[in-house]
Length: 546
Image 1 (tube, helix red, strand yellow):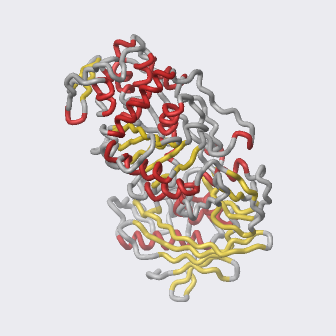
Image 2 (cartoon, one colour; image 1 turned 90 degrees about the vertical axis):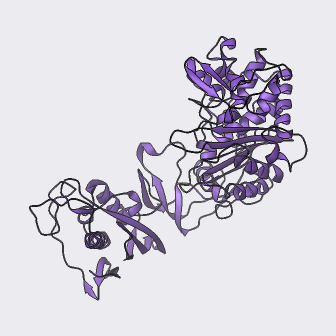
Image 3 (tube, one colour; image 1 turned 180 degrees about the vertical axis):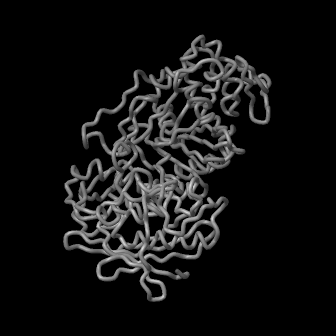
């Protein structure tokens, strides 16, 4: 076959044409790498090393031809290094997704990768609509056979497929929704791309309650046990629209738009905003290639933004006071683990507010023995800030984790490292709790929609602890590490910066959280450096739009 070969539909069957001549038959025996499958002359020698350009071209074209023919999925699967998975996917392309015709055009290879385009028709119960997309495959050498084979991945069939997902066409299990913000402004994935996974989940969960009627669609379905938290059907093609039911959310379209723009400035960035007085989620946005809703489902060390919780615990125990002296040496050793401040700074004769505002690690860790309780921090995180209480936001979310720890691990938790796991919604909620004094579980749709049980913290911040925390955050925004990011904002404002070191990363993750009047927000930027450098401007942009 020559470059420019196309797979066409002839007489209702898939067929490959090259220069106007139909592609020949295949001689296939068995299946799978290391088995007896062989579509080329037998050779006593098992080849090694990367496949040649000719092998890459021929293998790609032969696989695409067999896939396009559609009569024997096993034939296409025999050209891959995972015949069982490939055969199921190729069979489902026609039988489950009801794709009845296609033209597949391979492009020039780049190394071992071969791009191709698919132009197809989806037909279901008298309805039909074209479907086109681009994907790619990679050719590798079989480990045991030495043959060039397609390195199987679900993305070969469609670029949005992942493990345990498949293409399905039929009547949609739930009706479509018209999601609107708190003021009735429509929210679409086209205008607000970060909301795509959220809107999919809202439809799956509340589509029937919204009162719409289902249409016929082609969608990506998560199969089996993998269909759990954070997964939802993703519609690729609508053959008949059905009727949308209106679903009101707590989001604010104006703030959401600002959040979408803010995260675009940085790779792997996330932000969330919460209303302290109600717990309503005002905005949630991500800039990620994988489409993962990290703002609500992420689990990472939050760095020094965790010091808000640690400070609350130390204040409750009377071990510190905002205006009381606090030691901040360059380094401190705790049970064999050494901790230091950024650039090894120290504060001579400073107060706890100064240590908080400048994010002094050692001032916090020095006090761990004085608490006389390794589990004091996890207790406050849960009892006051509602972390780990199985939040029911309305869509899938992770509600933070501060597990019980000891020794150096417990000390690391004090500064948001070690086993502490958070996302920006969790940290925005921590700031909202600090601002209001009471934990109010974040929600993205009203509780009244389904009477779900919201998490309730065991107790609220004491008035005195809350006052000191807010004042320290105000100082951080006024002259501390949050000054530059918060400079353009007015009103009652406070902040906390954070930098989280991650194994294997040369640059730390940037975290920042702040409040302005009745809005709290938090952001993280992977490999963004210091908290105020990258995450700070993201938070400021969101607060400024509120």
